[in-house]
Length: 317
Image (cartoon, rainbow, N blue to C red; front, side):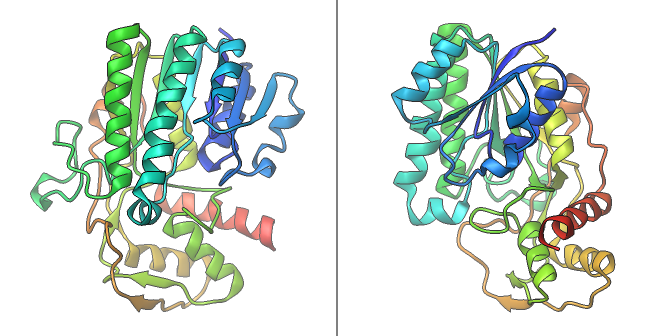
């Protein structure tokens, strides 16, 4: 069944991939994005589609609420966010404005517009905070103990989504994402380590590893994340949180080895002190998503890196 879908942050890295999949499946799509980190170039193919509409607006504004109310979406994919841990540490008020006030505006718009469901992006690393190694991989039953303001604001967003479901009856699902990577990830600003490193490989410059290089993350390819969003949008929302990752730890040191092999290089990164607010280890238990969303990742780390490197070469070659 074709639906009317709102995608906040739809010009961003993950959001634009969600938009492409929705359009390919025949849905009508409205994107709301202030282009602070998103790019219109990410929507180049989408913009030629007759079922696509773009609104240049901030999710914290009443303009976006009014536009969404008029669009009357069936489902809302909420990906617009301040997603940089470092920015949240330096400017927690700004982080809270975007991630908390902005999310409240999105909820308001969804309720006024008669949406049936909201699927929102949360953080699988910062939400749970630093956990004991014996508790890895992290399951959804783990206490939420975010260390960085970014993780705190995402926790509050989830609480407000659950409140909206209880008060207004709108179905909500939150996805705690691992470290997403893939084509279109901007190596500047809030980018993940993979995009940053590949930019250095492309430019034949030396990347910097902060900390020992033994810190781990659950790296998941963007195509698999998109599949998770679509799967969640088909499920009756219960206010649930689902981890979306691979269940596999990959260290920064491992990443460098993969990248050296893929690019046929022998890069030795520069070392620098660890950055405030960042975790030593993070890997997610994805059992619940597998069982309840009937979803599982299909692209392994090395295959995803190969695809991402090919994209970097095409775009920057």
